[in-house]
Length: 402
Ligand code: PMP
Image 1: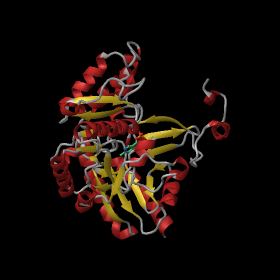
Image 2: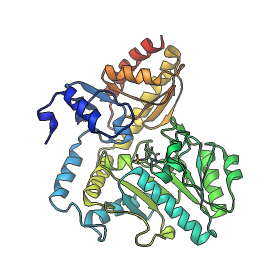
Image 3: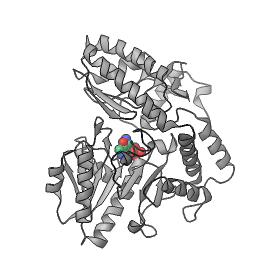
Image 4: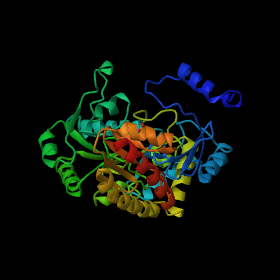
């Protein structure tokens, strides 16, 4: 039963209001279709997408590669149960390990779940090799997910007291601060967990000196370095994985978002020495589900074949240059980011107004903080799409910031 066949947009919005359990105010828009850089709602209005499904749709909307992979795999095997290996699972694991510094992969379906796996692996390492150490140091302003443990790992003050108590054992220190990390380390520490670029925290890029120092500290104490690359992985920062910018190897890397190009898929990668999970320690019904594996492979093959990372680098340079040139005209500041994960600050906390006015004009952008605008388009973005986005956004900035 597709309600769209019989009902108006207003009916659908009323039904959504009645039946969808969600507390955030969503705009009165009913998305129906996507293609490339664009989404269309049920009124036929077209939106240029610079949110990219929240840094997810790296190949754009409805890419043929995903459609083909899903159709083929669905006709062959959808679920063999987590009790068995399946063919696409092994092929995809081989592909991922061949292009990273890791040799073991564990597949799940969301970023939070991959991070839960990383947290549990780090705690098990603490139990086995560090006298029961269990504390994990994460950073202020970080975002690691919305399950209880990942929400507790997250370094934001959005924690809702009604969900208390938090999962204990997470220590938050300021980002890019080597001394703060050194001071937080105790004999209870088993890992340090970092986003190489804090995404939800407003696009804050980790300093190479900081990352190298953190790697050294982890080595000295035999504690694990976890890179949460849920948002930065799969080409987003202009390298396939953000750790490659830093000339270090993390012990664990988590991936989600771009890895499935929109299909729910995530992975935790690590090295053989940390192959310490026993059967039943982690995972669930949908671990390494064949449809996701087939999609993941198709996405990765397309990223490589169509030189998507190269496009990310080129378009990032152009977009950064244009934004830097806008600083003088609109009072925007601190243009920053890596690849196509870019943000800038507004002179006033009018992010929500800017986002709302852009939506009206058919442009999707994001404001992770009241005075910050974030852009994370599909990685297939073109110069023409950037010009079109900038035209709309500057009109909006001119009217909202007056
Ligand atoms: N880690 C990071 C860095 C993220 O940006 C996100 C999602 N915004 C998550 C974890 C959680 O991923 P998911 O929403 O798929 O659970």
